[in-house]
Length: 217
Image (tube, rainbow, N blue to C red; front, side, top):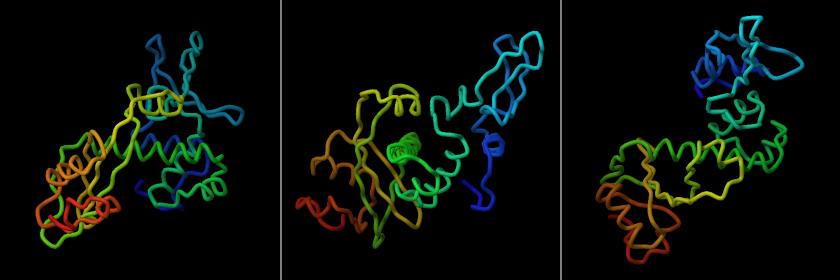
């Protein structure tokens, strides 16, 4: 999120307008009768799209068919959380104190954004990272691989298939992520050979457990 803490919105309407600028929330609405809709703000209820025509007056939530569809957290709180998460100010205690999120919601959103980033990285072509005398950090995680739209499925509590992910990070330039079948030394060795350049210095907790792999390849 390309802004400072002082530029963050201070109400739900401003948060929606900010997300419209980022094209995350629709800038225009259309009702089921193909009439143009306008965004209505009220102190009594959440902002909604409403049809211009008095004979119709159809209403629709601003979240419908957007990244936020199916999520219950107020959009203002979500925007502030995303900013804090990007700044690595996302501890559960801080979210509870500063954003008034309950414990479970803070945990869910931390996991949720990790999944969003992992899916974004997995959708990109892999590039080889590292090189001679360059330090590459490796990680492995277990993510939910959602069959439904990510946000709806994640918060609905569905029992979904899971996907193991291998990641490599060279802090000065690039990061890559790839899926793996299991966490065995053989599988991780293959992932390292495919994604990390020769002669890289590899660090990571798993490396200490893999006697078959040297500290650099």
